[in-house]
Length: 186
Ligand code: SAH
Image (cartoon, rainbow, N blue to C red; front, side):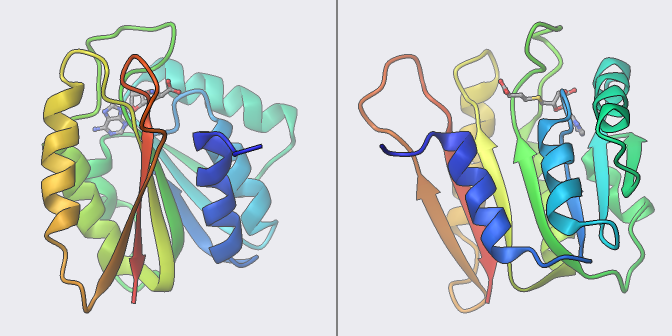
């Protein structure tokens, strides 16, 4: 069986993150990626998890409590402000973005190209050699196409000598299925 998008996203990160590293969930949403990163980095590792919505922070906090995970800093702020929370010298082992809106919530609160790209730029500076930023691009909602187009332009123009960029997705599915962009630092 071919693996689904979310499994592939996790596999990519699991293969590149080492225990004890610091990682970023740029859009914690319902907390599934935060929990995943918390497990992958282990008790000596750390996760900075961002979301602008109160509901997302609360749901994620609840999930982390259920699994007794203590290595996460939850931050209710835009990922455009990551540099306010992560020390200049801090190396990042990997990061994930899940774009779009929070499922079963306000569909007008969405990630946007400009802030997503600001966050990517910041994380790329901190990323370890061969580290990955994995972006799950949801783009079927209102505003999604603009963000997708901006992102593809941005990642497509990253210097080939400095970064390797992968696009992975199913190309015969209806209703604008999500796809993965992964940026690896060389
Ligand atoms: N589309 C995915 C879920 C995406 S959740 C799915 O269907 O599974 C995206 C999350 O990003 C939401 O919880 C939203 O509040 C958050 N978000 C939007 N803009 C943000 C920003 N600038 N910084 C951090 N989080 C943001």
